[in-house]
Length: 454
Image 1 (cartoon, rainbow, N blue to C red):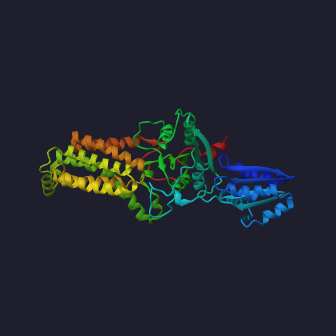
Image 2 (cartoon, helix red, strand yellow):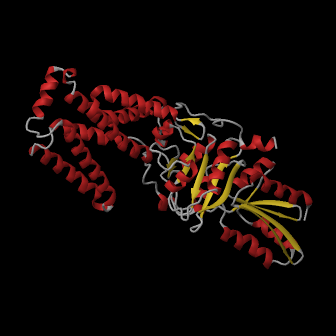
Image 3 (cartoon, helix red, strand yellow):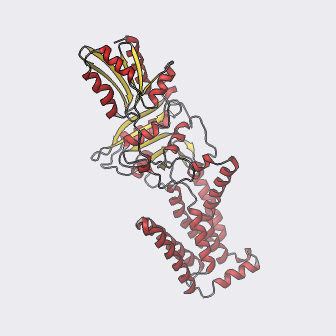
């Protein structure tokens, strides 16, 4: 075996380690010797076994086997080491034999139709989502992020369940401090069984009762790749079609992959619209109670008379009216999730229409209340990430309770306290209300810099 080729393959392997899917094999048969290097999540192992390994053991003469390799149609040519590295990162298998270094395109092409994104849907862009197989998810990331500095570290969580996980990051961009915190949390996990990413998130953040999420749960490989390029760390778990992203700031939860495909001003308009929807879903019900119960003089006379006229016959105060209608809306949302997909949307739409009409005719709710509840429901759904949407659904009831007791003054004080709370939060050391994304590491030394300094 030519020493230079063997050294070259070994060097390529070392550049990619630690990685659970990098395979370097040394084969010997009939006085022949061959080295084989490939990335298991990108290459089709069955084809490698059939066309490269199987033929190696079947063809006795080494010169004849080399001629066979040169005759394979999927052989790729290269001139520089960078081109060779690029071929390896794009699903090519490298074969070193008798001073010859050859590359063969043997990609493992996943079927995107079986893994459509169903939660974070977009009009433009790829519709592919993660699957429940860890190896498939690694393939989806590898096939989009062709960097030699990408690292994939395997792990196990759960003393009884022993669920496989993978920590994925770009060594040249990821923060060494954040990575160390995540690795330590996974190693110290005391849970017997970990089945959901929510459990894994609580293990990593060590916050079991935090209301606001500080890690993103996503099903989209393109979002994962974007965050890898920003120096963030990805955690995958076998058996779940989602990935965890850390760190995550408030802006991350309000951005959608749809924004990447829109013109500059259109994308910013959509982001602004989401913030406006967030404000409406949080403040509108509480403001309605505060104004109608404590400060009706804020409205113009015509609007005040219209609201008062619509509430004629409603037998209870405005805060009970708001709570009743909001709880009905929450029940409809939950029903739409639990019902079969074929009838879920139809049943909840018809149920909502009938409920709203019946409530107004029975004088259980005013017409203006139906408008407010509809606006709150629509506004809450514009938030792209479900975890943040669910959190805001809960927080609006806190605003509601404070406005019931303290009116507009209490609502404003509650909003300020909530803002202070968000300011006090951080996600692995990164300020939670930081507005702009950074292309460089979030803070501190990168993993590569730490290794270079020993």
